[in-house]
Length: 305
Image (cartoon, rainbow, N blue to C red; front, side, top):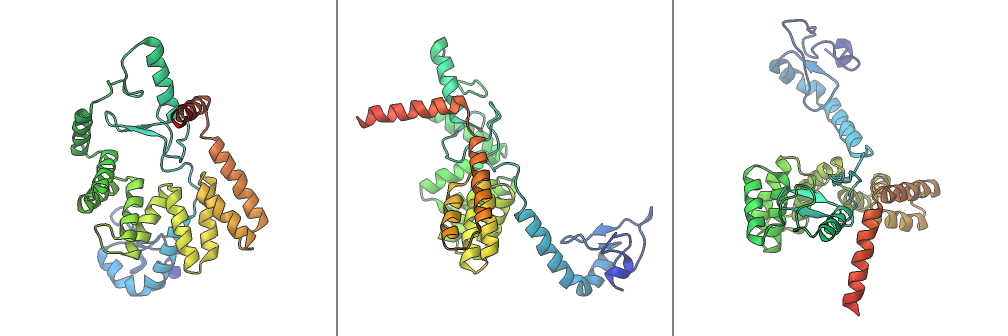
């Protein structure tokens, strides 16, 4: 019995195997991999699998691409929980061990000014807890790991990497991904690429890159674009770089400029990417962040001289 005959391709109103309609005592379950068909039982699913397999694989790939090439509303970093402005990609944000919140440099700078003017003790700009000692930071991190905090697990994985403990690094990243941490997916992709504690596995690398991309990770998207280009899929590569550029990714915009000079990227696509990139970068700016950067540059100039 065909999918079209049962109406599954259009309305999924009947079991694709036996044709049973959904009624009070029969609840149809959608195929786990696609949205084309539904079944009244596991037996019907198994019976229909040989007939459905080819269409299922094709539709599953289409659904995956819809997720991969969907324009994210924000990057994986999200917004600063204090000023609610998107966090920049320059990695100058600070994660506070007391509350596992990532705070932008502008809000950290404003908090320091508040403390100096009020002559008060240093504290976390978010939870207002006193700045912890190194021993207290370790205590907070362990406590948050025990509470299944993915951010704390990610941080622990990064610290294990710095110590060369790749086995534990892998364990913590894996736990963090299971709890939905996007950056951990990216870190695992890097581990599978560089053989840090695991055998090189391009399939798993791509899988983790894709999960990071779906979560809004522009660097993961840039890297997958490079892989697609190297394997001859230049159209898919350019699509990835355009989306990453629209998230504010500098590497992607530079690569698009390079490919434009080689005739791979159109003038219109490049112009649109440049506008989107500027808009994304501008959206992360604020007077407080500019003041923080100016203060940082002044401090660096004093050290240099």
